[in-house]
Image 1 (cartoon, rainbow, N blue to C red):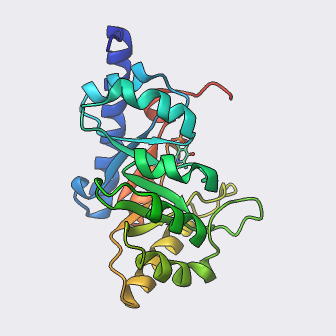
Image 2: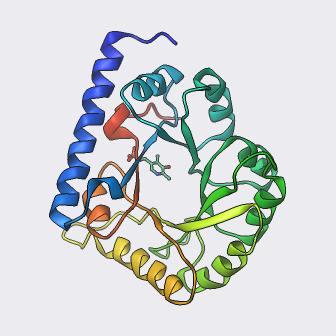
Length: 236
Ligand SMILES: *Cc1c(COP(=O)(O)O)cnc(C)c1O
């Protein structure tokens, strides 16, 4: 599809900056940069911006709003892009999410997981799942409570058309002087306790534009980055 040289330049440059931040954070943590997948969060961005990122080598894209994603995906078909659904999931949207995405990061209850498993088309690989954890214990946030993760994880791990890969969180903003890494560390410990109990989870989806370094320091394997790649989003 057509997009301007200006758009291509800007997105290539910002993508390179984000890769640089990931590389620096990995170096500080003694990790290899290949252990961190960059998920470019393209919600509210036009298909042209996604195409420009894809032309710069970006493969994984995260979308929050189903209708918006379904409108853009056909324009970008055939490029081998990997689509992550990272928004809240209503049960009447599971069929289309199961058919049009490779990963779903926001699963926080069994009913949603059961529907995604039942509705995942047989021709596609199992849907890759992260359970969203309400790691900061916010009243308003979606996500399963930390105390309930192990029960949900065991149930989801048994669903035939899903592959449970790990945990995802969006921590509450940390107050000035607070420890940015603490909620990410808590998510990593939760994952370790699940693995000690017999699961084999390899994914920690955590870290956004403002806190990717703290997340990588605590073991993030997928960082979900929007603003730092595409610029500020227009308010919805
Ligand atoms: C919007 C969004 C992001 C990206 O946030 P930025 O601050 O723009 O990097 C990451 N994860 C989720 C779940 C989001 O909704």
